[in-house]
Image 1 (cartoon, rainbow, N blue to C red):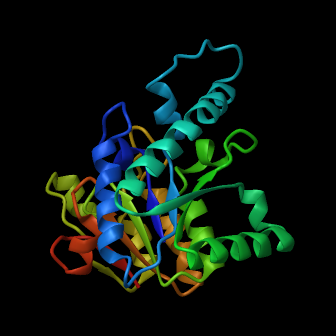
Image 2: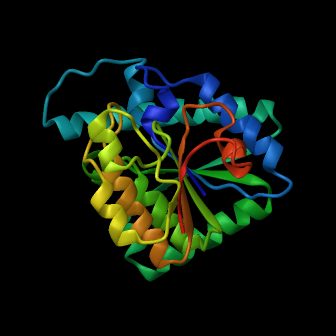
Length: 247
C-alpha cells in the first residue's frame, strides 16, 4: 500500500508533476513481479488549480470540494496515461471515512479491490471529496491510507512525503535534521514530532504519526519515505536512503 500526498505529486510546485507519476509507474513496473500495489493518492485539488480559478460563492471548504470534483478526472487521466505507457492498468476507487464504519461497505471495498488486484489492475484510491470533507479538513489522506491498508491486511504501508522520514525533535531545533530510522517504542515517537502542516496538502508529520498508529494496531509495518526523490521505494527497500521504519 502506497500513499502519495499532494506535496509529493506536485514536487512542491503548483502543478501535478508528470515526471513524479512517471517515477511511480517505473518503480511499480520494476517491482510488479514481487509486489502488488494499491495507491492512495491526493492531488485532485492541485490538479484542478492548473485549469481553473473558481469564484468563491460560499465557504472555502465548499470551493475546495468543487475544485476536487473538477480535478479528480484530470488526476486520473494523468495516472492512466502514464501508467499505461509502462504496461500498467489502473482503476479509480473513491472512498469516504463513513465507508469504513459500515460492515457491508467494508466488505464491498475488500471484495472490489481484491478482484482488481487479482486481474492486474492497480486501484488508485482518493477520498470522495465532493460528498465528504474529512481529507480536506483533517489530513491529506494519511488516515484514509492507513484505514485502507488495515482493512486489506496489507504487508506494508509506505507514506511518500517531502522529508527523509521523521526527524528527531532535537535535530530539528538545531536546524540539522536527523532521521529516526527505526521506531519500536511508539510512545517515544509521538514526543519527537514537531507539528507542521505541508504546504499543498493538509497533513504534516502529526497526521503521519496518527496514520501509523492505525496501521500499528493492525500489525502492519509503516515506512515514511521521501517521495520527492526518484526511485524512493526501490532505494528504501535496498537501504540506500534514510527513512523512518515503524515496526
